[in-house]
Structures are given as C-alpha cells and as structure tokens.
Length: 212
Image (tube, rainbow, N blue to C red; front, side, top):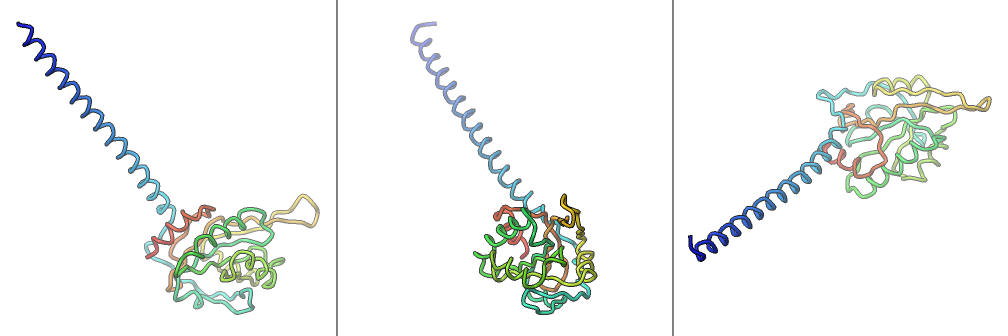
C-alpha cells in the first residue's frame, strides 16, 4: 500500500472517529436533557398527586358554627366557591402559623382565590374575638370558625379529621394535637379531597390550579 493511500485511510478514520464522538456526545446530551425534564415533570405530578381527590365528593351535612364576626356558619355557606379548611388553634407554636403564612402567600396573588377557613381545635381558648385578632395578622379575608365541641367534632368527623388535648409539663396547661391536612370543599359544599399541610406556597398553588 502506498503512502498516499495510507494517509487517505488515516484521514477517513479520523473523520469517522470524530463523527462517532459527535454522535455519542449528542446522544448523551439529549439523554441528560430528557432525564432532567422527566425529573421536573415527575416532581410536578407528585405534588399534584399529593392532593387526594375523591371520585365521589361527599356533601357536608348539618353543623352550626360561628365565624370571627359572630356570623352563623352552616354547610350552605360553603356554596359558590372553593374552600380550603383545616383544624388548628391560636396557641399553636409552629405548624398553624407557617401554614397560614403559606396560604396567604398563595391566595393574595390569585384573582379568584379559594376561601381559607381555620376551624379551631381549641374552643375553650379560641373565642371568635381571639380568632379575629389571630387571623388579622395573616389575612383579613381568612375565616375562623368556633363553636361547641359537639359541632366541631361533627365537622371534623365528616372530614376525617381528629383533635385532642395533650397535657402540658406545667400543671393546668395543655396543647392540642390535630390532623395536619387541609380539606378541599368544592362550590357545591361537598368534601372533594384533601392534601397534607405544606409550608411551600408553590406546592399549594399547583394543587389549587388542579381544581378546575
């Protein structure tokens, strides 16, 4: 084989190697981009899947509570718009205030936000006036409901929620343990689903956007 032919073969080999590396590099880049997008989509899907939507929403049945403005509240008052309902208490040191802050961050920027309703799990200390002062620190449009233990338990059972007193370290003091979920009530006053409490506004926003 002459030298010119050898050089030509060498050049062809270099060309093929170069193109093979280019294709391998391109394939690797496409694979990495695809994996990244898949992770993002999977994360968004998992956030929405954290909202447990019922196939057959359950109509709220009769209960009588009072809001922070002393208005009587019953199932009919939930008709006409979406509502987010959770049980909490004004002496809660962490979960309740962070939840309220996250919900406020979301609803204050929405043109038609759902109604945020905090139902007290501590009726002995959370009077309508106390709830009014507490909610004012977060958002004046938020509703706070209180009432008798029987009526509070009636609503809690419908939502699958529970709450109970926990004795404190000092005699005569106590805290309250409650379900850390947010119930979703649709505009027909039906219990449509629930999701776990989160302090991430973007997670809550994605769930709200999935309502419609």
